[in-house]
Image (cartoon, helix red, strand yellow):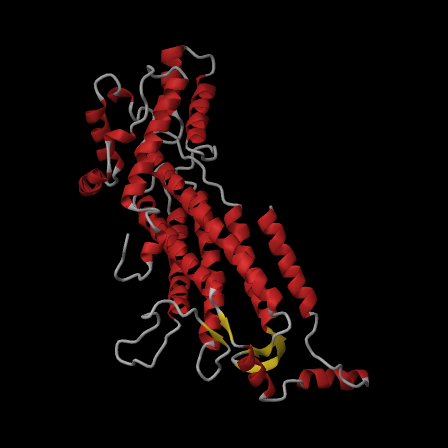
Length: 406
């Protein structure tokens, strides 16, 4: 996918694209049909429905979706039309459109989470190396835009690392549950089928077994129906925003320290046109940092929309609140992947200008606090004023190792 107005969108690949989501939707229908057959609730047959639809059907289904308010209705009709007389009556039996769409979004989100986890792990390695290599590279610490006290670039990189580790922990803790509840979230049709077709002593237990089987096939977690309890969506959104928050912090530091009058950091050189201006040939803009900051600014409102939708999820299926989630979650997930890729590139090629850091540090006396402490103690100041930087850096790097090693 590409997007003229979101440069770099292609970095997210096909994740959450229409073809990927269509494939996920069909996978849900196939997994459910297979689970019905495994439980003896549908006659055995070939259950892989993926060959019945393809990318060429996306446009048709998208255009038809307006009639029913979602794309699942048209897809089910298409699958039944193409599946043959013996199989078609059993497709989608016991499901509702929300089951299929919610579960398909979880399937697609699981793939996003896996790629994001790999990218975060790489960033953690890169930041750990930066923190260790520059633990003794002196620079100015700045508070409220002003020179404050001495620090090192290793300490700053360790601070970045802590933020990425926080995001990594949030992503690693995510669950992607299947949502398979039937018409109103009570498994009503599946229980009825289990009762009438098999005479099961506990048709509810058999219905749960069908749900668990389908979830396992899709490599999703089992959870009781969550039609209007939208925690799985909002928790995922919050984890994605935690990522863009951490990268926005890094990018904000870099755009500041890459200013010509500061000159302490620089972006990777990239291609010949990277950072260019349409009118000023001498400029080299910190474009990766700028685009990461863009994502960090745009992500929280998307998550807020998902929280608002969760709060307004009325009845047993919301009228509009559910519908607004789909593309909002897709957009947030793709933009997070894009920003992750951009931040990985930024960190891997970051230029550290230690000479400029040292020169800016020498430019003025930053030891007022140290002198005040020395006078309070009635002693001469220590030869350096770097606090417990080594200990704090080692703590961050140790945490990083534990996170990556599991």
